[in-house]
Image (cartoon, rainbow, N blue to C red; front, side, top):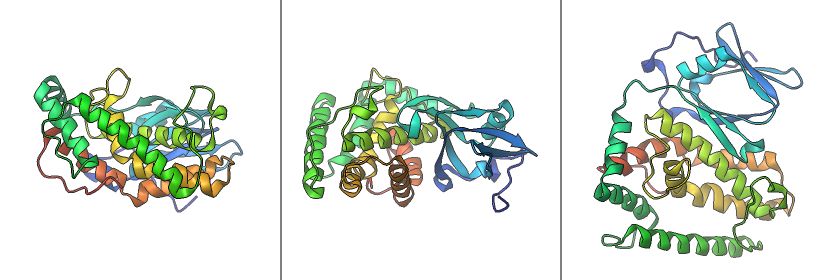
Length: 292
């Protein structure tokens, strides 16, 4: 398609858009990513070809039936476009590929803060304060804060079910058995996974590590889960209950993906995350606003 911007291999860091200015993500399945005249092109299963403006895309989510050439990965790495391998419609997050950052300052800061118990708790408290702005959490332990959050989320589920007039029996998902979940849980699972993919690419792109968390532990991507909890209420939970009402009981992956993408763009997730991450880790001024 002639309207698509061309990406040339020779590109400088200064010429790239910042994370906050990029398009959040593209989900692709059943096709091939390759290079044609120094630009990345997507060829779907029907042979339709689209040239992708890789330098303006934050992350590419590769679903089932996709293949990618070595040269395409090289060009996407040079453009700082993160590549994530996911299940169908981003239902599961499998792996990610990222280019090494030349400046290790941010990841060093993250490690140093995480290794200091007091500083690590301060990071957690800055995250929880976003969700409990009217509560004094100065003397709360991490266990107490996590308990408060568990109660808040349970209450939120119940409130959204009541607001949209949908049934709710609790959060439930069995890996590998997506089809057994009810509609609301299906939407929660798929949008959560997509959110994790986007945040993973943002964290890597900013030179931080998704593996060093401050609230979550014992999981592959604790910092991703820490950050995702900041934005889930609007992007995933409210969307899941609203769409359960709108869809009338029938899961529609295209509608779910479209509505999730709209909210990601509307809420300026990339811009907020780019501001929130250094604020949570280092403290200081933060201007990202609420979690919507």
